[in-house]
Amino acid sequence: MLTGSQQLNKADKIIVIDKGEIKEVGNHESLLREFPDGIYSNLVSTQQTNFKNKGINSLDNDSSEGEIESIDIPLVKTRSQENSQKELEKELTVSVDKEDQLREEEIANFRTLRRKQGYFKRLCVHNKPVYFIIIGLIASIIAGTIFPIFAVFWTKILFVMMDFDNMGGQLFKY
Image (cartoon, rainbow, N blue to C red; front, side, top):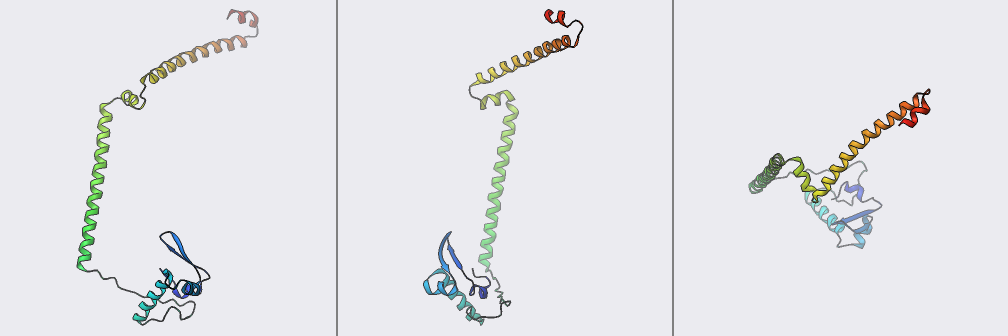
């Protein structure tokens, strides 16, 4: 794509990329001279012939820097092109609607499956060796009972330590 073609003639470096690879590098004159059958040369010659057919000056003519010529080429579609475009749009909307419908069905199936199974059954599906869950439950029950016992024990020790009068006798009691 040539944009601002008058300025491209004066560019220090033009890089031609084709399918993600750099094919040609240079300025306007060097690209035309070194790659006479190259991509840039073909593009310039095609654009020059199009401009000559339209009665516009060639790209090589230097015009004032601020002046950029623009061409409005009307895009005319034939009836077959319009019909094929409408058919493509219909096919795309139908395929998108089918995808949306399938996605909604999957969500509905997941919700009904979730309602049928309880939390514990779904947990067991993700943790195949079920005894890990049982070991975890037992460990949490033990930890849940030990921490309150420690809390009562340390509370009694703190109350004994706060009583400065009978500190010695009470300490050996516990």
